[in-house]
Image 1 (cartoon, rainbow, N blue to C red):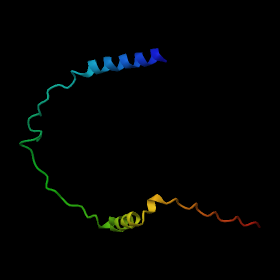
Image 2 (spheres, rainbow, N blue to C red; image 1 turned 135 degrees about the horizontal axis):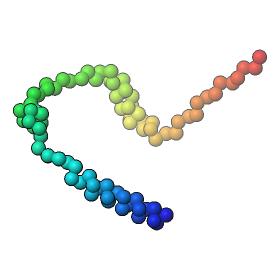
Image 3 (cartoon, one colour; image 1 turned 120 degrees about the horizontal axis):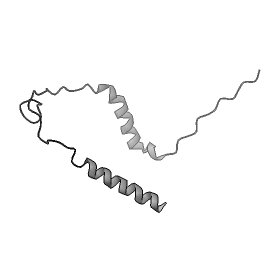
Length: 82
């Protein structure tokens, strides 16, 4: 087991060394719009009113600490015998 772990560690080090120089040029490409000279997108708010019932339920659960109580097992319906 010890040989396998040391082999995996050395393989990881070799991979890290091999890919350490693969970054290429770290400056943004001209016209890419990265940081400067690009087009901006206006912020659009999202309607979150559909989540209001869930928010209310979570607030009630926090008030009653329902998340700390053990849930009851679901009741099984008795099978009807013909």
